[in-house]
Length: 627
Ligand SMILES: CC(C)=CCC/C(C)=C/COP(=O)(O)OP(=O)(O)O
Ligand SMILES: [Mg+2]
View: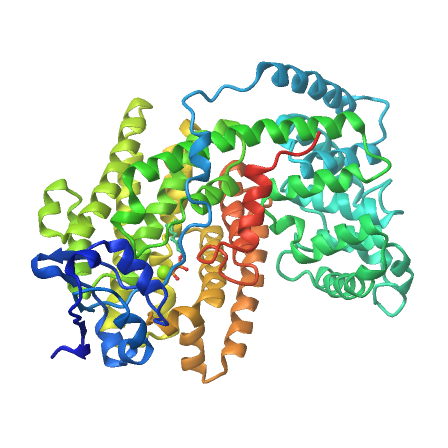
């Protein structure tokens, strides 16, 4: 029998065997079969076999529980139980990976020395080609492009810098890119490479490809390679570069219209670029897909190709071990059982870490970023998908005090989260004190508190049914996105090249950090807000904009997209020399946005991981590149 209690909660009583229902798994699986739009959580089992569930007040007031449950299937529970449902929780799907990566856990991070030796020999050959006096500048530029796209540039940073600087000096002297302007493909590749390197070249170098009416010339239509390179180059645009805007429209339109008529290998490349432009792709994914594109190019250099494959697979084995170690930590913590309401996304969080740093020297940074990501995900779900307002106030207070003695004040499930947050901090503390960089801890702690205060403000808005103005939302969501915190953990992990000025700089919210935060916040909001609103969530950018300007969801999304495009121009501008901080620090910011662009491309692949993200993780972490 099913009835509501005086708080509007549901109680279920049946008079069959008590013992059998005390198996929480039976209850869980029974509830999973329901048509409920949430997953009740078993919180405690009292004597007399009473199982307590919780839901939010909002759910009760909307009568969600009564409208969505299927009485017959509940009644079919062979049980003698009473359920009190006090909380609405998001129905997040379980991990698609289970314990798969635990098999790779390893204490030894050593590479296979035989492979290392092969890589060294091949690297020397490539280096010789780069510094050779015989190779023409044009050939070198294409070689550099291949090296970068194959994911090998971290081996040749000095050589690449020297060559591009040399070409740039010529340009600065003559005002033109001599030797390159006759061929659109080469010109556009060089333009992109120089901009990627932080060297500004005027987009007017493309003027000669326009006709007398000032439009991009129709004769380019037969030059697919040129159009594709121009398309890739346009993504380096900064504000006010109309010619690149025109080039983007021109190339996109024509490449889209011919993509299906091209020969197979070209078609793959064009479709891949249209879907995920090089500049906004995660570097490891770009390397993985470019290795096969390069292999199918009849003009490829065999030594470079084999080097790329060996290097990719060698790094893959390192990344696998790192994923394994983090998954083992997660399994030992028993997170999915301790916090069953939260997303179980350790593998996807490791993907975030790998997207931001792939190079072997950044192993520590990868680990720290991945751990912060899972901790942030658990915290996010606690604030916006589970905790009651009173519990959240307690938790926020405990974070403000940042002290183990606060544990006693917290409900049991929160104790686990709080301890995990403090344990992670202590781990960083030990590393930083050993490295003589103890000062970074205050930056971390301060930013963590700001991040939690952001969540708390949103939880209060939700409880009081406050609809924030766009300005209020932008201000608070900047904090709740934890973006500055994320940058800080990246820099903590990067070792002593991250001097205190870098932390001061990032904490002052410079233009590039603001731009990246806007990209990440708005991208997330566009892809998640509809689902989040259904389960009860504070207004996002989309709802705030709709409300304030009385426009449709579609129009608000378009405005969000426009802001993302603008923010990318800010990012590109801030990556041009002279930069405020050295490029490796800006690269992290770029990479965070790239991961965001990839994971939230058409939907929230972070929460719903069975689709494209699973394919990406498989390509980077499961399947080696065939040699
Ligand atoms: C500081 C860091 C690393 C934060 C990342 C937290 C996270 C995974 C948010 C995405 O989830 P979401 O889409 O539920 O976010 P929100 O609830 O803010 O919309
Ligand atoms: Mg959330």
